Length: 356
Picture 1 (cartoon, rainbow, N blue to C red):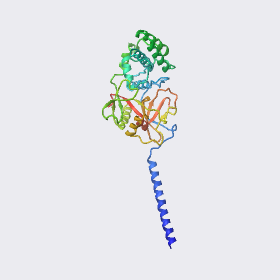
Picture 2 (tube, rainbow, N blue to C red):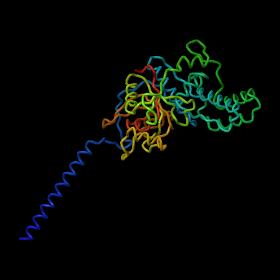
Picture 3 (tube, helix red, strand yellow):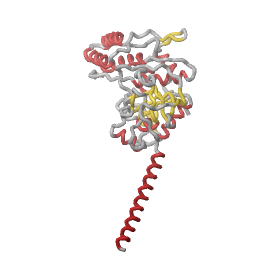
Picture 4 (cartoon, helix red, strand yellow):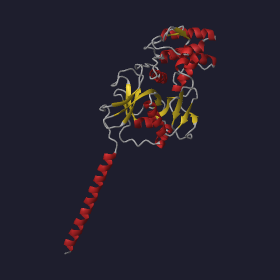
């Protein structure tokens, strides 16, 4: 009798264990069914929800001028969506930037190096001061090695005996490597100075910057502490969900956004034309964004124009971004960047002021 009772209790205990395991498996299945479906990179099928009008994809070549290309692309789209055809020259801006940096290096007696890095608002400062030209009139030299050119200009700045001598030598070097300066900007039968043309396509106050970090209070602007903020520009600080809503609503209302963020994640695949967070990464929150910014996992290393919205076959939202690395990838130079990637890796954006 004792053995029978023992076997009965053991059998009952075993049944309870099996029942609990079955319940646990059912719960796991339910949780997994609620999780976001992921598609293997390169096998996504995208449906375009919104696509703004754009100029052809350009190639920044051997230069760190993504911020110039992206902000100019944003300005172009803003005009095209309003019925005004415009295609702007990054090479003109590059030449003016290098000349200004060379003169500054000479006058400040700090000619050790000339950097071409910057952020989107810096483009607006530059064209306001030095002007702009049309792309067809100033296409520049696609083979220009800007790193080498900058080093040569720094050497000129260190050896010149006068500003006049330096200006002449620098102009010759820039003429040979980029393109000689045009005398003016010809448009609709009239001639404008580069500065007049620049002011006609972009006002100083036409765009506003936004960011999202917790080391400053929300609802107030602050000077963003990143190495390339050369002009000490301020950005309005808002919660990340509010920033994503602003980006989405801006695109849906027919206006572009200039995006700056981090592309060092393994899920950023230019060849495939997609950027997604890898499976297993923790959910993106305001706190995880801040941690990644403070530990330098999220840095300001690239800039693109957001020009559209899309979703994949699982219904997951993506932003369509116009890159500046030529048209050699799967989507002709465009990138499909997931909502979560933008949520995690955005440093800041520039948005047209007229957007409510």
